[in-house]
Structures are given as C-alpha cells and as structure tokens.
Image 1 (cartoon, rainbow, N blue to C red):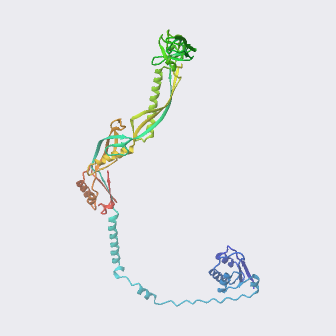
Image 2: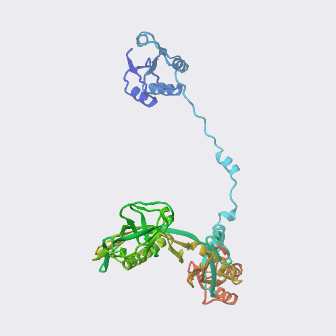
Image 3: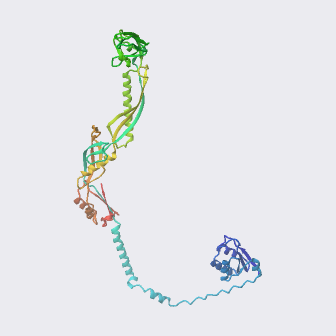
Length: 496
C-alpha cells in the first residue's frame, strides 16, 4: 500500500505537523522523527494527530528510536517502526473501530425542578403598582443621599483687621551666636580685596637735585693717641632730617687733646639742601664719634637744584584720596553683592583693612607730567542676615499678638536708624515692624450656624456671631439648591 512519508524537524509543533497531514493524499502517513534533534510533541498531541488522520481517511504511523515517543504511540495504538523500509514492508495493525456515542434521553420534568429551586415572586412584586412603588422608594432614597453629599457651599468671611506695629531695638555682633527675643542677633564678617590704577595730570614744579655740596670739616682729637680718620666717614647735621656728608680722603689726626685737622667733605645727596651754615655739622656716625669731635668752620656750598614739572607730596595725597574713594565705592558694591538682597550691611563697620600694594610712578623726587598710582586694599565689614532678622521680628510680633487675633501675613520691617557700633564691636540700630492681623473666628461655631440653613438665614447668623468689615459671601452649588449642606465637610470657609 502506498505510504506518504513526512520527515519532521526540530521546530515542528502540533500546528505545523497537522498542516502537513492535511496535504497528505495517501492511505498511510508515516511521521519520521529526526535522529539528532528533539520534536516537542506530547502524548495529547499524538492523540490529536491520530484523530486528524482518521478524519482524512488515513492511518498514522511513526518512525523513531526514542523510547518515550514509542511508549506514548503504543499506548494510543499507533504503529511504530525502527526505519522507513521496515514500515513499508511490515503489515500495519488496523486501528480499533471508534465507538459511537449514544446521547441520553432528555428529562421531561425540568420545569417542575426549576419551579422547586426558584420559587415564584410575590404577587405584589410582579404587579405594576408594586413595581412603581419600589421604583419611587428607590428614587426617594437616591434623592435623600444626594441631598447629603452633592451640595457644596463656599463661605467667604471678611473679619475685622488691625495693623500691629512695633519698634525693635537690635544689638548685633560677632560675639552673639543665636537669635534672642530681647533683640540680640549674630553678625557675620565680610572682606573683599579691590584694586585700581588711576592717573593725575601734573602742573606743579619740583626741585630736582643737580650737584652735590662740598666743604671742609674740622676734626678735634678727644684722646691722647693718634686717630685715623678713613675716607667715607659719615658726618651729619643735628636737625630732625639730618643732612649727611662723607669725608673725601683719609687723614691721620695727631695725638693730644685739642689737636685738630681739616678734611674736605661732600654731601651724600645732590641738591641745594646740602648747603648748610657753618657749625651745622656736629655728628660723627659710628665708633669714631667717641674719639673725635667735628664741626664745619665755614658753610658748605655748591649744591644746586633745577626746576622741573613733577609731582609734589600734595599731588600724591590728592591722587591717593581720589583712588581710595573710588575703591571704597567699589568695595561696598562688591560686599553687597556677596550677601542676599534682604540682608542688612552694617555700613558703620565698613573700614579700610590691609594695604596690599601701593606704587607711585614716577617715584618721589623724579620729574614727570603725569602721576600714576596702583593701589590694592582689603576692606572689611559686617552684616546681619535677613533670615535672622525675620526670625527675630516673627518672635517679637508673635509674643505681642493680641488674644483672639491671627496673623494675616508675615511681618515686614524697615531700618529706622543707622547702625552705630560701640567699642565692644556691638552694632545698635532700630527697625520698625508692621503686620496685618485679623480676628480669628470659631470655625465650629460658624459651621453650626450654617448647616442646613438657607443663604439668608446663614447670612443673618454670621452677622450676629461675628464682627466683620463687610458682609460675608455665600455661594451654593448647584445654583438651584436652596440650602447649605448638612455635612460640614461640604462647606468650605475662606478668610480674607
């Protein structure tokens, strides 16, 4: 007998194998399992394939060496072979004929059984009037429940308003570490380094040293021995700003008291300032001054100056003052930028600190028609934080809040006096504080006066119970509802 051979693959399942059976045209269909791959077909799948082959008028057989598949197939009566050649040569056992199922006779007493299980309804429930009454009761119950939960009301109250004002005396210092209700606040230090370069046009004339003054110094021996006076011995006048001279050559002073010798001298610095009167040079610098006395029998001369445009000391002071003022303004702006917009800078603590660098060009005594100054200075100051101020103001106003009133908004404050710092480093100043407050209504009392009342009655109750600056407003939703809700949670109270 002709046999249709179908070789299975690892990815085949019940659906794909069933489709392959559909296309088979032979009276016998042989499914061949792959040797080295697994096909996932359960015993139930084999039963489905067997019935499908029966419906096509074909007999199903398997070729496999897998014991589990052979056992399942044999339990279903499906022929199993070791090879395709054996399947074509051997005789296939015929399947057992399928038994025909005979349906049972239907039962005749089903309606009686149903009546026993489900007893009939009462007559009044099946009548038209009974159903109408039941519907009416349901509608009334729904309306009653809706009257409790659906209505909403918003009541806006305008209670009496008063303005609370006070003047607080504040002491702020770095030695204070916490906010105190008595007015003490911590102060925080700030520092900033600023620098500037500024020039000034010069029209003044200054004297420029040109030549050095010369003269003669007379040394008198104060000892009994010979004294060696080396070249370069420094001599000076006894004025507040000594003018110094040096001997031009070395000399030996003969031994014996009152012996003297005259030595040529020259001013150390050029200029007319070296021209001094006779008897002005009386100081001998160094150990030599213990052995000799000195004097100038005649005035020194030859020191000259020349006039030239250059900065004077007044020009330097003027340029420094202008530059320092500009730096102060810049430093104040930078210090304010380091703190918050509402923080308070204690301007009386703003002071000049360390001078980091100060350079004039040209140097003192040098000519020039323009003076340039490079100045770098550190500035220091202290400030009070807005957070600490707000905390102090809030503590103070809350402590003086009248009974029965509540704050409508946070307090505001403004400095009333400029800070002044004492010797202990404590800055004292005053601030003016103001805050709006309103009389606090009793919400439980208000809700009791409003529940279930009409808008007019509720308004009269509120007028009698509260002191208000204007009549309250009552809004009921939905608009066609005439009374306020009975449930307090559905009444919203706003205070303005």
